Image (cartoon, rainbow over all chains, first blue to last red; front, side, top):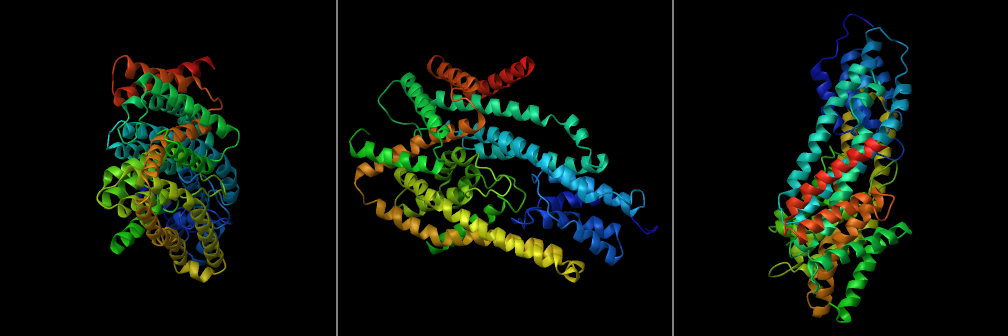
Length: 259
Length: 252
């Protein structure tokens, strides 16, 4: 703990942000993101602890089990940088950095899974698929742009927020309404899914089922078939088995001359 | 042909890194991965078609905790590659259907391969922790980033082994009677409805959901009464969903 210690700059935090994009490069069952976490924080530790022994000890400490939603790991990384900085500068030598990681990783993991995997990605994808079935070829670009504005924006800002707040999850939740947004995105996705089925008459020719019936009947039949599939899935039908069963159904319909 | 298969394996391996190891920018989602693969093989339209069909099917197969879902990126790129490379004189919709059907069989293979990669990675972590000297000499970064090779080679080898087999299957399929081709064409057209059903099951606890029904009615009216277009339907359903969600939030 000497005056040689350097304070953390914006550049240091940006290096953490850059490395955080690789946090899962060596994801494993036993340690999950532990090596990735240590990798992301390594440049900061090297700066904070010029003595080789102390650096090595702190780095090894961060190789313990760690797993959370990869985007939300940025918040914990920011918080840990702050705690390590305080420790290195002699302000909070007894801070339990492992304890803070353990406390934050599970709730942030659940929040991130629900927000990113369970609501933002489905909404972006459902809208993009609706565009493709309607013949809009640049839908994948819209999907990537829309998703990554949120993804990259949050991933960068969460490192800084974690650093400033020292890992105050309450501050995070009061700034971003993740649960409210997640609910809205899910409901919008459901409305667009209804729109995809209801607009089946406007699907591009490669995808539009060719049954000799009016558009009104086609849409109603498509919705009835979809709801039947939902009911089967709710009774424990597996997606893979259903895909195979659908193929068998199509072959039977073709061999019996129905289509 | 051999060069094309190797090209698919390299590109697929690189795109697959986005799934877990690098960034997760969603380039590896079936919609984007299949479109990219199709564009590289000179048929972006087939790529887009396969991507749209598979996107909803695999959308909510999420990697939560230690659960490793089937590799939808491999499935999408495989389906595109075998449909395009297996077709002579233009891609038939039935070949696309067969490509997608064959991609289902790859699901367990990719899950096993993913498990193996993660077990290799566990050895890396153990090695680094047991060797502090290596840690001091920047071994951590080297060891961690070596995981990228395992993830890359996992997909690369799967493509290299299974794409030629898929191409062979598509070429043999071309000689089957016309009924089988009609069956696979119908299969491609019905799969989006299965995709919609899979997403509904995960997003709503009700089979007949209020928002789903609302979106359906909006689209139905726009299509049948006003002869509108898909962009109009998307816009109106998004607005309807947003307003409905806000109303629902206020009420609860």
